[in-house]
Length: 235
Image (cartoon, rainbow, N blue to C red):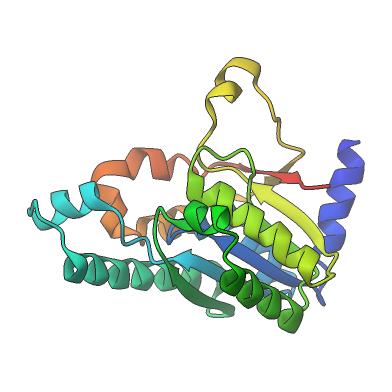
């Protein structure tokens, strides 16, 4: 079984592969897929990262860094712009300037509300993008992630692929472990991508590009730069 999954992953990184990564927030691109991006670029794959939000609803790090209590719309907008810049620097490192990206600017911590409303505009926008790009591999957050933006991004991603009648390989990554994993240990990763020392170091440097997050979460974030990057296959 493990050999079969490894083969599926290897075949997904052929030089003609088109890899689409869904990232709910700036920083998810490196925490969840920093190693995969490096390996994909090394194999000559095309990589596109779609950020669902700008990460602007991030009050405690912003309060700590900016030494302010009140955070209004303008402050949030500025913070989101700063986080966009951090994500671009991160991708520059991971992809050696060869990763494309875009930001949808959806409400941070509000994607689940859009899913509950069955937001037709967003679903159509994602479907059109997927159909236009024709990815051979889509990497998205796990449906088991504790963060609502991650679960909703997963739901929208699957729905858009279905609406577009697209059938790429789908892999998922987990950032926020759900409570039941601490008890059951499940779901266990289907695949662990092995990272070289160089890839681990580059992933660490990419994580550290997110300076807004380092003040309060440096240790937790840097702990993602390990020798194994875990994923699950969706089907």
